[in-house]
Image (cartoon, rainbow, N blue to C red; front, side):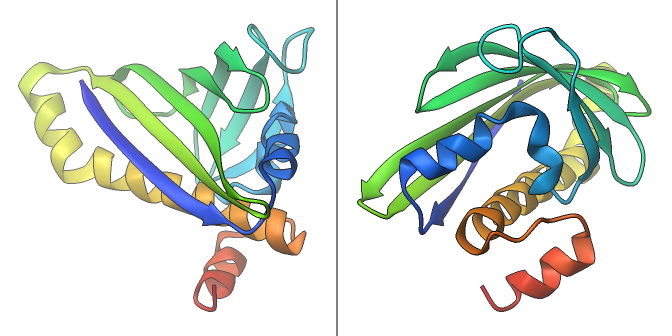
Length: 166
């Protein structure tokens, strides 16, 4: 099992960040790695809510909330739909911590298990984990920009130009 955690300080209240994160189908608004996302279940938040994310440059996943801590965070189970690396199981925990009145820490903890035995472990070490870590850093940077500056992140190049000055 591989695990990593990434964090970002955001100049915003915990409640305003929660409002964005809990609008579960709208991850495309702040994640530069997602070209399109939408709710695919009857409920749009809480345990059992499911969204589909179309990834850049290719690939598609279904993400289902399996734990929900109102106002604080949630755990998702990620299931591949098409064109993804050989990952057997994958979860991500999104958490918000209040640091001061207008400052919060957002954390994303990823746990996953590769397929393919030793080959999967090698592939993970040299290719998969570095790409996954970068994608979570980009997600958090996009969230920070979206919440602090009210800028929709729909282009990875645009995000990187903003981040150079952040």
